[in-house]
Image (tube, rainbow, N blue to C red; front, side, top):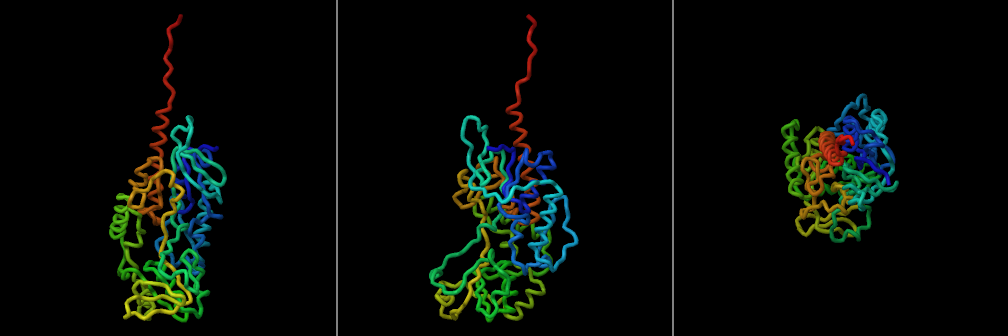
Length: 372
């Protein structure tokens, strides 16, 4: 078993930001802290994004702390641009990320000599650690809603996480489910090549005009943060900000691409159907679920962190049920700028925890004896 003062799980934006701040306070990679990442290469979730999502289409990508991303070609796939940037960042700061490593479970370390450590069980062996920074994001947990008749559909069903780009939908009838940014991006791409597209959402989409400034951003983050404080499952920041009404979206609305249908009631072998007879059932070849993701935190289950509301209650970044565990890129910090800030906040708390431990185990002072 290997020991480290801190284990960071995940090397996306949040994990690299945390690792950077750990190094800045004097902790040494691979001695004092270790970064574990299950992905095959640098880039976090960005490396899995569809090729048509070019860097110029990325909304609100903030640089990692200490190193700007400059000179990127806006027409190059974001997976390549950001993957190369993360690779250069790891190399520049010597972060020595271990990959690919799967983290299977985190639990209380057993035994008299455990010293209050956590046991991190991984595919490269166990680690004993005093503090854990969890930065696993959401990409590994795509959310697939379930509807009656779903298993009978004769066409293709896929999720945003497996979206290949618009080319594979040429000449097909496509139902896109989901009212977020991914859903609208998919629709606007697919509509140019598909035989027909249909947009289905649970709620009426909200579009906002004008700049989305710091005040609006803080208000949106506060709404997500309140859910996390109450132990509810977090919603994404994007879910409370609405959709930006830019020129491309205006054009798509004018062309009828973003004419929204309410959520269907069931799936048939040949499409989707509504109980409301005023809505005509739709025949489809493909159902594309742009329905978002959930936090990838199942490996933390042995620690019993979840609240009755389904989420992990977090104060700043610290799990309320276990102060050794910090969650970055979770809830209000699930954005590139939020992940950077959360990484710094988590490290400050971890440093205090390590200092308290050092004080508790410090050797007793030596008292000079009286000469015989």
